[in-house]
Amino acid sequence: MNTRRHIFAFTLIEVMISIVLVLVLILGVNKVFKAAADTVGTGQALSAKIRDSRAVQSVFTKELAHVAPDGPLFIIDSRTQVAYRNAADEKSDQDGNPLTVDVDGNNKEGEPSVLGEVLDFARASLRNHRVDTLSFFTRDLYPRQTGNPGTYMADQSSNEAWVTYSHLRVYDQKNDPDQDASYPAPGAGNASTNPKNYYADDWVLGRVPMLLVTPTGVTNNSVGTIFDRINNAQRFWCLPATFSNPNPQLLMPLGISTRPDDNSSPTITDLRYDLIGTSISDFRTILSNYIEHTKYFTAQSPQTPKYTEQHYWKKLPTDPSVAGGRFRCNPIPFKPLDSRKLAQAAPALLNNCTQFIVEFAGD
Image 1 (tube, helix red, strand yellow):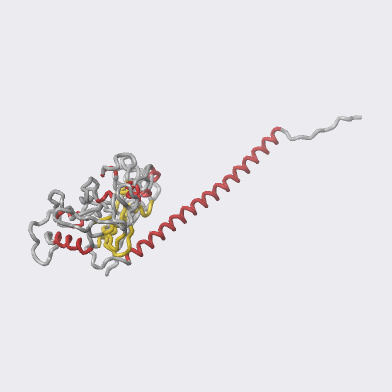
Image 2: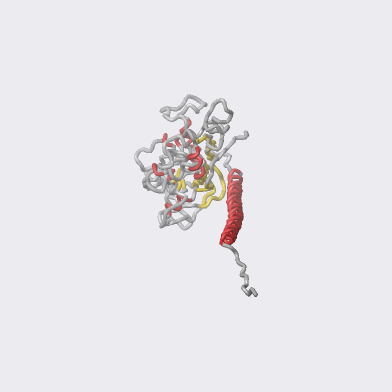
């Protein structure tokens, strides 16, 4: 009689097939979870951008509702800046020209015979970006966002302000923060010389409210003093009375060369302080006197001497075409923080802002 028992088991090949099937199943589950996580992450990022955009819209609406009707100026500067969106966009470019693309997929960019392969320089697109500037005077309650050395924010406010919206020059995080060249303009240079502000995805839209307060004790030899609520004298951008021969053609205290009342080195584009020693009425007088020396004075012939720069707006930090134009910022300051670093971070309104378009719809 045969008493041998039969023992059944999986063969090695069957075990290996089972392991492969389990690995495929695990890989599939991992793909599902990764896709879900990516979808949630994308949704959260999109929600954050929508939330930021709505917040910025409310700021625009409130500020424009308080524009001073007697303001000396209302500037809309419209211009474009050619730039790649990001490093991947630059890497995908075949001919090194941001204004040419490959529409028909034949690996040739910028063919004149193919509609859309040569981007219009005058039209906003993915590589041609509107970087407009909006600047005006307003009346509302504005608190200080900066303070004297050692003070983050002064206990002070004003009912008048000069407000500017525009893309900012951003600190390159590697050179001397006291040098103007360390703050390249949006899209300037290349990714090496402008690591924080070259690609459009990195651009920062800024809001710069400069509070206007008339100094007290102004004389022919003194710029006067501005005090906060607790009677501390404040540093402010001023019309120099005691500095050597202030030039009326510099359009101070809003001009691009304006310095603080202690005549220290930073100029107004540094945004070290957000306080200007003037008022809407006083600066309107200053600007009117300037215009009388230019071709825009239509009441009679221009006064003498005729100013070299006929376009007064080119004397202001709001004109990106002049040397040092655009305000500076450092949205990611190094530690330890101090009042100057926080002052330069304050103007950042909206990060990753590739387009800022201002259109005038008429009276």
